[in-house]
Length: 331
Image 1 (cartoon, helix red, strand yellow):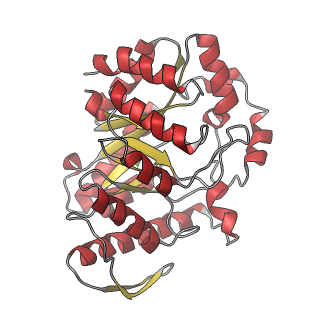
Image 2 (cartoon, rainbow, N blue to C red):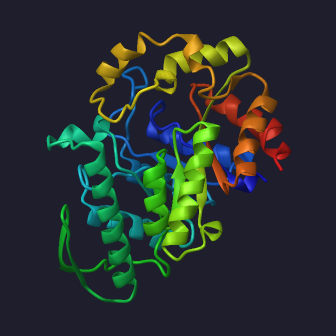
């Protein structure tokens, strides 16, 4: 069962070399697949790191054997969709069958930094799906040895192709926690990565994704349906709760974080977070069986894979504990 459980790299809390080493350690512990968050800034100043996700992916791919991809790369603000497609195609050519591309509508924290207008959520979602269309068309044409042009409302592409392509283009998944976006993902994308969702929300998102796939003439059961799960594990319950408050206060915030623009601003908002605010938001426990049961719930719901992100700084101990006591007991 461990083949269905992936690892979310701790790239915002450690130096890039250590992040690569941890990805390799996760794989040796039984995790399969690595997801790297695509951030320009960390969520909190105290986390301290925000490496270039694509460079980190290239490095860790050389030190692991399972699949890998960016967590929620955002087309259209810092990076044009064609540039994302080129980076993705190159990694897939280097590692055939191992790379996937996950895209999202984005958050101001990392995407407003180039100084452009930060649109409202509906426009961000429309931009996302136009970018998905562009990327998939560019992949398909390039794989067939053809040039394409693209003229959309938000993005343009002059006559061109990707000259470096893998035998099979990488799948394009949409990362979202919203049911409307999930339904559009079912129609337009190759798969789903559910993020920031409770169990009840995850069920609704999955149902809407399947509905969208059916509307698009696709079989949703055969498409990737993945979930990003935040957990807080530590040797004691007190430590697990303390590290959630310190390192992941956004997990307790019950409002959209998409318009927050700086780690310093989030740090100010985080001062209002109390331990009791985490109730029902993510599993916080020293007991591996609590975490096993939470992961199992999402697998039983119908998700094919769960990528686990431990919010603390106890990276090696977390990987050892899950490798010994969680992954082998999943069914």
